[in-house]
Image 1 (cartoon, rainbow, N blue to C red):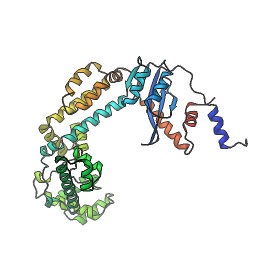
Image 2 (cartoon, rainbow, N blue to C red):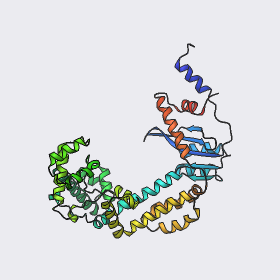
Image 3 (cartoon, rainbow, N blue to C red):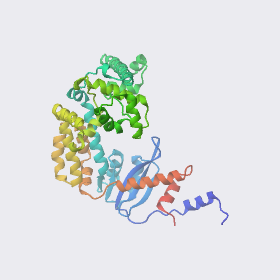
Image 4 (spheres, rainbow, N blue to C red):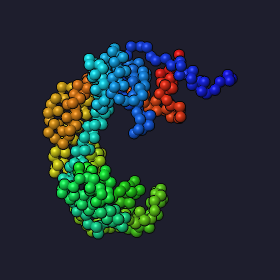
Length: 387
C-alpha cells in the first residue's frame, strides 16, 4: 500500500539494473526488431548459462564490434549467416571461433532447392505436358482466371520486347504504366506466372465425392445434399463446378487435363518420400525426374548437405562443395565457401543459435507487455535483472 507512482517504480528499476559479472566465453548474437522493417537491435546471450547478457541499440557493425572488443574473454561466437555479425566478430575477436546457425543452414539449403525449381519451371512444364491449356475444359471461374493469366502474359511479353530493345527501366515504367518492381522482376526473369487452379473447400471431401460418382450419383444438387450430411459448409455452386469438371474430364485425354503445380508444390513433392505421395503426384514427379536430371542432382546435393549437418560429417564438406559448385545450387555452394570456417564449426561444435532465438521470443513478449514503455534500458532491466 505504498503511495508510489508508476513512473517512480520504473525509475528505480532502471537505476538498479545489474548487468551480469560472470566471464562470458560462449556468446550467441542475433538481431531483434524494435519495429519490423524499420528499426532493429542486437541481443547477446550467454549460451553456457542460458541468459541474456546485453541488448544493443542497433545492429551496426561498429556497435557490435565495440561491444565485443570490451569482452576479450569470448572464445566462441554463434551467429546467423548474415555478414554483419561475422565481420564484427572477425575484427573484434580474430581468435574466436565463429559458429553459423544450423537452422539457418538447413533453411538456406531448402530455399536454394526451391530457387532451382523456379528456374527450371519452363522445362518442368514441358516434362509434364502442361504447355497448352484447352479453355473448353475449364469451368466458368477457371476461365476468368485463365483470361487474367493471358492478360498478364501479354503484359510481360510487351515489357520483354522493350527490354530487348535496350529501353531503360524508367522509360518502360513511363510507357507501360506498371510498377518498377514488376518491370524489374520481368526483366530479370524472376516472374514465373503459371496458370493453375486454386485450392478448393472441396479438397477434404474429394474421396467421398469420387465414391459417390463411382456409385452413379451424377446430379450436382444431390451430391451437395449428401456432402452437407458429411459436414460440408460450402455452396452448391462449388459442387456443380466440380461435377462439370469431372464430366468433361471423362471426355478428355490426360494430356489435355494436366495443369502445372506451383514451384513450391513441386519442391515439396520432390522432397517427400514416395510412399507418402498419391498416385497422381508420383506420376508427375517421375516425369519431372526423367526430363530434368539437373533438378534431381540438386535435390540429392541438398539432401547430402542436410545429412552432413545432422550426422556431423565435416570431412564430406569439401567433396560436396566441389560437386555443388557447377549445378543449379552453385550460388548456395559459393555462399558456403565464403563462410566455410563458420559452417565447419556448425558441423563440429555443439553450440548453435536456437537458444538465442528463444530468448528473442521472450524479449518480444516483454516488449509487447510494455507497449509505449519498451525502451532498451527498461527491457534490459526486466530481462537481465535488478539488484
